[in-house]
Length: 375
Image (cartoon, rainbow, N blue to C red; front, side, top):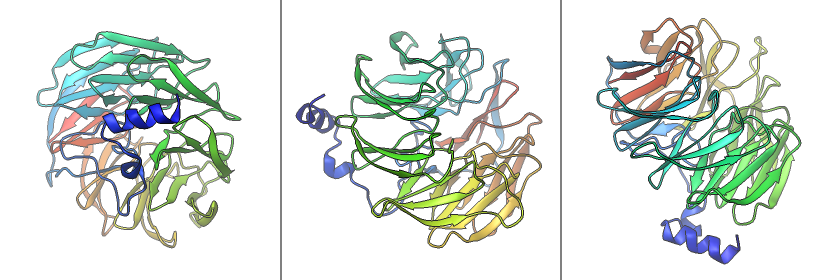
């Protein structure tokens, strides 16, 4: 796509280059929607909604197979992928099935993105699917060369999707046609973080990539320091992410240099959870079973909270609490000021899915195939 055509597309969607620039402060998903993984294009994991002090289980939908996908919530509907290979649409208010769409044999961690009346998701057969949000009817598919565990993001009429074939793809949201592809040296697992018209991701090739949306050309690259499966969160031109080298990295995008590294002094385990950011605090889970809260300026730990099993779930924040699932079978609400448990729900099945927050509700999937909604 030519630059002029791309800019015209952005303008039609109300996304001018000025609006795409990195803004000071933390982006929040609107109170009534969580349109894709991590809620905002900068992947901050923060919602403007208000969650009750003691949430109650409103409904549970029984799906039968593990749900590693995380939900999107738009227009009162929950969209989520299942291990059965189905994309599900459930009523946010009542949990009733509105429609189901059969994708491939299985949907893994890929989480849906909703934009312009369509739902986008990838499956473990390596296919990107676009489905009409109203009725679940197929719009188009696009086949990559390997499985998809990454989740899509949509900017104007462009769907960005990573594949285990080592490429990041840009597809037309309306027609599914390939706009461009960008090849890396290994799997593309993390979700691209879009800031200032550039897609940023720390790859499994141990490289931090910055790729222009206009033409798919690499704007720049630098070392990610290690193998990275998590998505990056960007605030005020600094990227935050955990690595498989047991560290959390703050990468200064202007200097293309590491600002700080955090590593727990005793427990050396990888970070797979993607970071959330609020009030100058970086929050993410570790395979060391702990939720870590770090000072964004220095990388020093403000607090850690130990669960009973690894945390691959990525925390979502509303108000003064972080909500996160653990493989110990519990959903936690942790007070951001103290690091203490403010509320928890014991489900009994591992929660590797990440919470979605909207309209005063928490939605999360379980490895035993249930979709839970709390209000």
